[in-house]
Image (cartoon, rainbow, N blue to C red; front, side, top):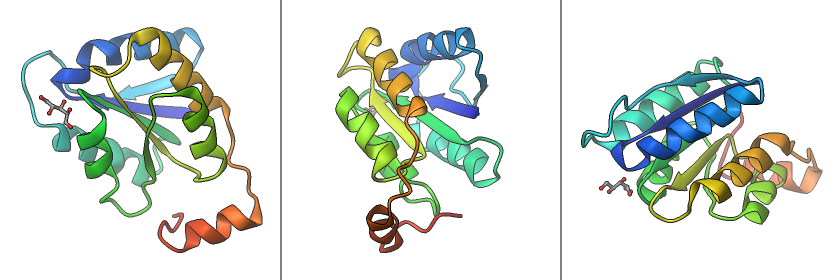
Length: 145
Ligand code: RB5
């Protein structure tokens, strides 16, 4: 599985921890930036990340900003992107299984790195259920490319 990750300055430190964790697990991870803790605009990195997924160059993405809210709003404007803001493990599992979410958003000012890594693991380890009722519900608003 190929992963892509991005953050703004608010999520920069947490992003580095997530990358280290994912690489230790053996995943290939593309980092679209930002590349320093200097102030920047989160929509720029949401767009860079969703472009990678839309091009088919990654299966799942992770976006981190201060709250995760701006990243999720920006990412969900893109066709084929189903971004979910998750700050608990239950939601991370449910949004993969039920919503076939392809981008996980988190807020580094909301949760600590320990919980963030548990959420990341649950998100990437949970497959979409392929359940007919969930496919039908997705078809209302989130066409899969
Ligand atoms: C940056 O200060 C902050 O607004 C951003 O990281 C994010 O929380 C936006 O939703």
